[in-house]
Image 1 (tube, rainbow, N blue to C red):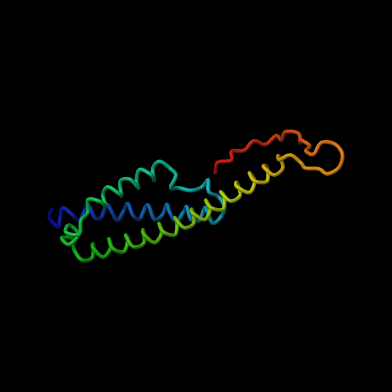
Image 2 (image 1 turned 90 degrees about the vertical axis):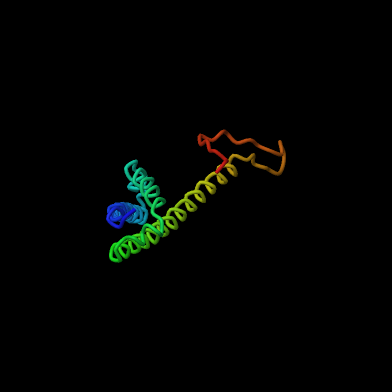
Length: 142
């Protein structure tokens, strides 16, 4: 592939990376505000863009990038670096939110289990009293 033919491909890849960076930064801001419903990366358009970026990036080999002008290659390197940093930050934040959510669900489930367990009493009468059924149903598999 000639240098002229590779330039549009690299420009397209840089453009996709910039759009993905913008979406990831919007997600980070939404998560920091406590509004995960406002995340952009869950939108079909962004998921399609992500798949296209992966395909385009996979087809770009080091040999092809050497045919590109130095300035374009530097822009590609910079956008790739920014994309990787933003994606790493996004991944860390989503993992933290996921871990916290799972911990809260686990704590609620354990509390419901504890409350649903039969009460042990001492003294006369049956050794175990049953409690009325609770209205909350939970899935113990987290």
